[in-house]
Amino acid sequence: MVHEIVSTPILSPGISPEAYIRAVSQIPLLSADSERSLARDFCEKGDLDAARQLVMANLRFVVYVAKSYSGYGLSESDLIQEGNLGLMKAIKRFDPEYGVRLVSYAVHWIKAEIHEYILKNWRIVKIATTKSQRKLFFNLRRVKKNLDSLTESEILKVAKDFNVSPTEVKNMEGRLSNKDEVFEAQGEQLLSPAGFLSDSSNDPATIIENNDHEIAQREKLAKAFSALEERSREIIRRRWLSEPKVTLSDLAGEFGISAERVRQLEQNALKRIRENF
Image (cartoon, helix red, strand yellow):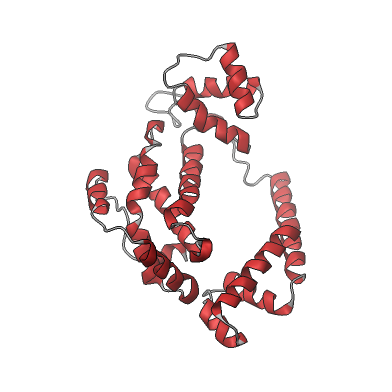
């Protein structure tokens, strides 16, 4: 569904970031009423043209957010593209009845996609695994902009602020200070990080562990789903577990209720699933 929202390339390889930014800055912004109307058309009727208009009107905001992550040595075009993906995911989930502008809701999704991209690509070694470590990673770099290295008192303060240990702060500071190495050997260079990595994708223990986790998650989801009453199960199945996604209006006609009532049943069902999952 995300890829169907925009039929034309948002940022193709042949377009320079400067030309792209100039182009999106000329796209008119939407009024609050127009935005709400388009969001309802997409949410209730599955109108992809309405979704496309919402995407286009907010592309300039993605550029603004992406530019704040320009210091990681990654392509600005890639950062913008990841942010655009976050915007489309936000539009898919946005409820016009939230009472907020789309941009306020979408900022979380835009930043989340950019964060994931940076964490996967900025270093070969996985540098942040917990929520606290991720927060430390993005904020410690900002704290260190005008500092050569942190003092012990500064390390203790940062550790307290981000709910991590002083050791984690020191380790992260060291990783942020190191220069990136070439991943694959160049020319006569015989040793590189790529030479020390092993392929664990076929390791039997890893495969079994992943399969067991996936099975357990499916069982929990099936149990939570079966706890719903029949009409709610059918709404969730038709709205989330089948393709193409059925619109609120279509379900309203089938059940003989309003689209708003279908939306309420859907939201209540999702809430109960999350509580039992």
